[in-house]
Length: 241
Ligand SMILES: Nc1ncnc2c1ncn2[C@@H]1O[C@H](COP(=O)(O)OP(=O)(O)OP(=O)(O)O)[C@@H](O)[C@H]1O
Ligand SMILES: [Mg+2]
Image 1 (cartoon, rainbow, N blue to C red):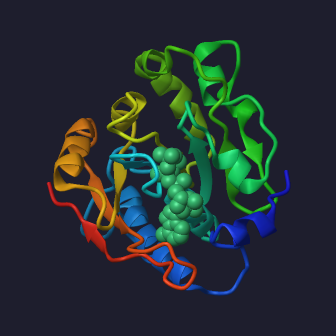
Image 2: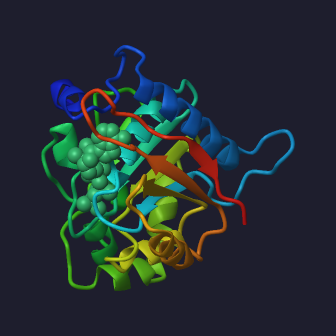
């Protein structure tokens, strides 16, 4: 399927083969950190399931989807990695519309229906290295499906034939939706987006405690101001255990 480049550009996303911008440079730095944890370095072993990365935040509207999509676009541009961007915000999916793609079956359908192979739900895009797994139909038991034993088998299928695939999950907010903490138990890394000047320390601590299922959590301080001229990230901090 063809991704709508104009839509990406208008919403301030990284445009494939577009000019180098502040945003694209900042995501390069973030990407390197995450890939190093996923693949290991000469000094550190790869983290188990470090190729699965959950993009979370305490509250809605802190920039999870913005970061998940930009990170996916940035990693897709790597020569030796491909990306599967999973819309795991089942209640409020927004990845397909951000890319101008049509809806179809997705992760929740594959979790609910053992007859439906999850790989059949993957949408391949015209951006080299970028594939999308839509959220699928919402049920009233999203969290229960995610917590079921079958989820791990379904997620394993996403990388079984693609060892160079990085899987990015766009999460719902941790403090207002229960699937986030269950998703954290399935991934090797969590990237916690913190909105500058808005996320309180208490909210951040609460959100981090809900991510206890994952040992590797990093924080990303997002946009001090989302003005047309001042669009940028603050710094990127590692979060030590
Ligand atoms: N660094 C940034 N620069 C410019 N715009 C941004 C930035 N971060 C977020 N935005 C914009 O702010 C709005 C909210 O961001 P986004 O949808 O990513 O939040 P979210 O955490 O996914 O929210 P929700 O929990 O509702 O899914 C979007 O319009 C997004 O494009
Ligand atoms: Mg979102």
